[in-house]
Length: 454
Image 1 (spheres, rainbow, N blue to C red):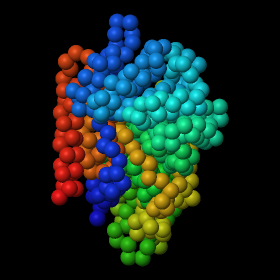
Image 2: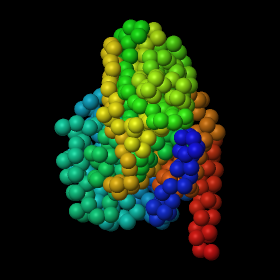
Image 3: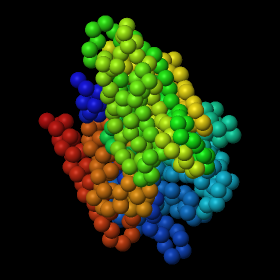
Image 4: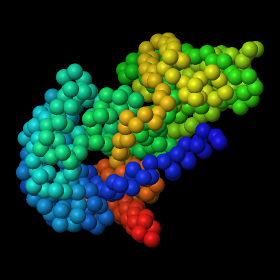
């Protein structure tokens, strides 16, 4: 079975039992309808969520000093329509401590231990307040910000008041999932993963969250506001011995990057086998992620040894063109790698110029350490969709990303979908398109429940 086909089978078949035990989530975040005074218009928002077909709302405490005060009334009205509420707060990076912005989450600002305690207290009075989310969690790590002791103290404070209170950090698919699960896996109840590109991308992240087997990962980055020269590169190299008679020996990896521009001819991803380029792709233009598979047998040296280099090189120098490229789950079949999975020790970083390379270990999986639920968060408005994807943000395009989450929820892979800032005021074709996807989701949920009763 090919690597790509195997990935699709895993996406469809695994984790069904655990996901069926969870309440399916279809919801939205922020873009609240407000009164002329800037307060939350409780009834208007609840009506919109009901029209959407949502059973969940991420309630952002940020826009107004009254947001926290309005939460109990909103939670009570939402409960009457069977809508769960998650309190959503901003980290240091979204406050005036770091950049010009609209302010803090009030009234507890950056005291996240206090936030956990106070949200827990509200959740006791309003049973539909089920958890809290902190924005941009992974980019706010540090000794004086989110670290393991602080997050442990924060989550412990909330659960001491309400043991059922959930904490889901907001994460991004481009982050280093291995580092995240190793450090914070025991402390979080799930994650919200923003801006899914494809089912393949979601499945790649789930391999880490569910402790499935995966190969080593190499993250290659070129920094901001930094010049480069032709032939600068960031790569990893390793030498392997092909097994006797291994005619189907193959190198494979999941490849993705964050380049959404059309500025081709600068950053070139590549694979070399015995110093010969056997695969290359410009990071610009093609925004789709892939599983890349490269036959190795015809490139083997006498004695069956191959030297492999994977990375990014500069075709032309740049002045300001940051990039992050992920070569994830690197596997070699038919070689002296246990179970096809390459490990951290197999690869040596090779740097020319200002590139940065980070290598994280592989895993044989199935240790039972983690089974961390995921809620996917696609963009719900045209402007944010354009920012995240090379598309115009038309209703059908926004709906297509929502559909990824809905279908993976029905397949038992993710817990649900919460759109980012879906417009909820006046009639809007994007709202209508997402509502149609949610209707499809509820139809599938009812069908599964009906099948389970027969």
